[in-house]
Length: 65
Image 1 (tube, rainbow, N blue to C red):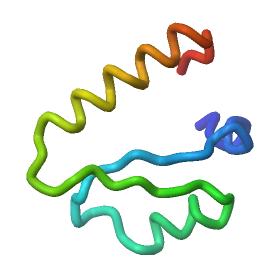
Image 2 (cartoon, helix red, strand yellow; image 1 turned 180 degrees about the vertical axis):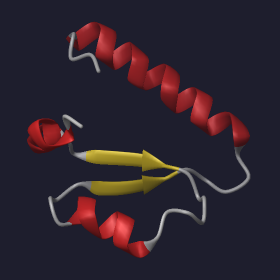
Image 3 (tube, rainbow, N blue to C red; image 1 turned 90 degrees about the vertical axis):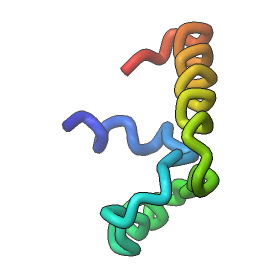
């Protein structure tokens, strides 16, 4: 993965409340000063709204994947 090269530009990690994400998963990102933002529980439309916002930001700043 190319995440190691892009880690310095990451400030936030958006993720859902899925139980597969353990405390050790979060610890990896928090060690690099990335703030974990969890989507609200039982809010299925929240992910779509976030994806739309992130897509808009990527297109306007030409950061891309």
